[in-house]
Length: 311
Image (cartoon, rainbow, N blue to C red; front, side, top):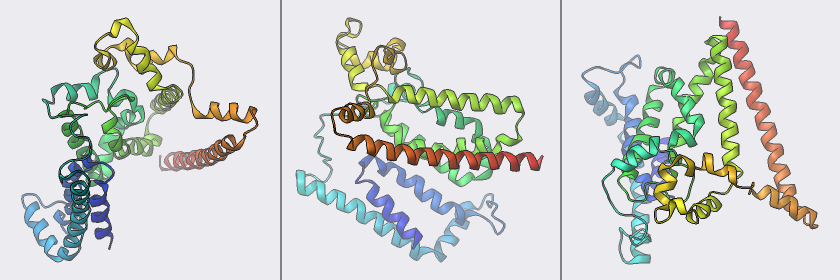
């Protein structure tokens, strides 16, 4: 049953975004990984594929069911596109947004460009690089799955002319991979009690700085900033390229010229005008966030105490 549900989830994920199709080989490899392990969970060197095939024979019903459900999801997407647009391969964008291109610009820009770098705009994922080796030791299959999902998505997205994902913070098309690559961050947290005190302090300082940066970016409007760039003579005629590659045009620097623009402030204004409903909703969400933060802090503190006891 879990195998079938996984197949169904993979199949219907393409209805969220057709780009999720590139994750299928990664998911299939992750499903086959345990089948290539020996009796004690160690991979059989030189006989991985042979062991996989033997394991697959005993679990073929589950994998066949998963493949059928995945195919059903993809088939319904293709059918829907044919029904709506007269072409099973037409997603409804009609070539207006993107076309295939050489991937070189997208490859480096999504990693390093000041306006588009994944590591700048997902700082918690960047901190996860510290725990990558620990994650590979603790959960090799899950970690390789996360890395493969990021790699394949990065490669395919880079080969499209809209690799940047429109007006957004960082590489928008790589956002779905961020929760997976956070496995390194989790491993870094887990190993932190065994680190030196100076390393722990430095790590938590980096976490606080990452939260501050994320909060700063979340309280301004990328649309307002892009409009400002459009009207800036320094970027005349090449607004997008400037937003990608110029440090002064990156949201990290440029947002300093903008006023905060968040829905919560609008809720306060509505309350002052006699309509408190939206602010009450924000208060409830904030309360849930505070409780969740308290639970996370308690879990981290208990982990710290357990780590200290182990030493």
